Image 1 (tube, rainbow, N blue to C red):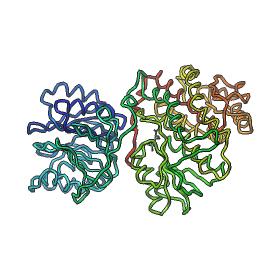
Image 2: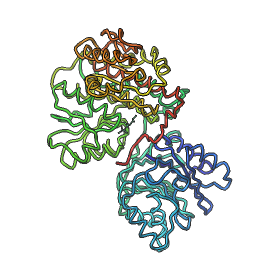
Image 3: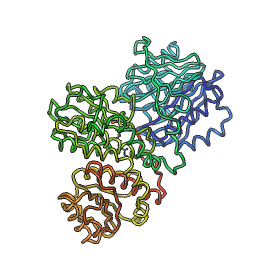
Image 4: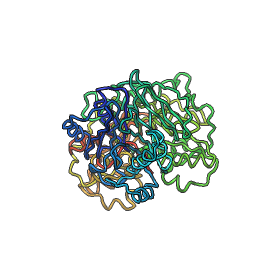
Length: 598
Ligand code: F6R
């Protein structure tokens, strides 16, 4: 939700570095973008509604747009529609100050009223615009630029990652509270961004900022201080993935690339954690985790992984329940002794952070299951288990869902009071090659093509395949903009069956040949009798193929692994449907990759 970039020390390459960074951050928001550059004593700003190419075109016309220090922003609207005026950077009345912001300033209305009363005029509907005006007021009172920025930040309530430049001062001033910010430490330049891909091509050395910290970037280097201005020692970490990981590598879309990266992502997740010979799972990082009962909290796709994970734990005798994090944060259940597991790809989702923080406030132990090293959730929770999927740029989560499912399997085996399930260990070992087999042989494109004009899509599954059905439907809606619903298969006949027609394909996950499969085949027969087309995602053990118009096969394996494999087929159906409809697959309308506001 909004991406920030900044750089100092890039010389003539400042503008191109900012635009490059914005292109890597567009997944965070893409309804408008802008840059501000300081150099030769002047401050110059360009901003434009629309995707980044609109800003790039506008910048081409601006020969004056040069500088050696710069900040940039790509926006996902919270206050006011996507217009040129509402795009960041925002400025003060004198146009000497420019500010970019990610987050929500909760007390902006009272600040705006106060500033308006003392004569400040506003150009936008945003909450952000109060910040440059507050800086302006302090500059007028005789404060130097850094002190003026600190004064402004001291007046703010809410969540913010802020970067500010001031005419005549070759520095970027930065503050963080509840929204991510990371510094990139190059040999000659220093970078600032909401996320590492923005500058990964230039450096792999990073410094994560904490809530309440300020940073100052100048040609002489960088420093981090606390709210009182006391300098802080910071650790410089090294990121361990390649810049290539953030490019499309010849695929039409990041989403397709990331779907195809799943064998590698799952291998990374399993590496060094599964000892097949010894029949054990080791999550060293969780050796001191003492869990008797679990509440898994998450949103969106991660919630579906949480529902899946909760069932794994319950099936192994650990009381566990999954909650939507936004609901959990506001009305937590009374259970005091539960370990709260935040499941979040980004580790920055405000709703899920609110839930883990509420749990910590109540004294509960917390665990983050996340993909993002150094994310807020990873740093705040008592324990962290990384899913190791590598960077995911497409807004629709794909490889990280499979990574979460896999990591939750490892977690369950690690915690399980009973003996390790050797069949599962073997199935997890084969998971990357089983996923590869699906990618090589899938008929998902034909399914997408056949049902392109459908009124709606219904996804059904039981037990572990119920969250997979919900996830299949979510993927379908977010990238195709078509109506889709995911159900526990038994629920379909309790109402939704009324919507089933020849124009509503039903995509059924039927794994194994046991009771669950037999019951789901019964549900398939019910829809088939209403002339709805059926797409069966199956390992071929049941007779569902007899009632299906299309079959998407998954290799026969352990049911826990099969639910991971079934989802791969659903990802591909959603992808090919969206591709044939010509949708904006990597940046679906109205969405953003990381939702850092509640
Ligand atoms: C859907 C999707 C979202 C996220 C949700 C939580 O494809 O990506 O539903 O799953 O916004 O995000 P994280 O996992 O970062 O907490």
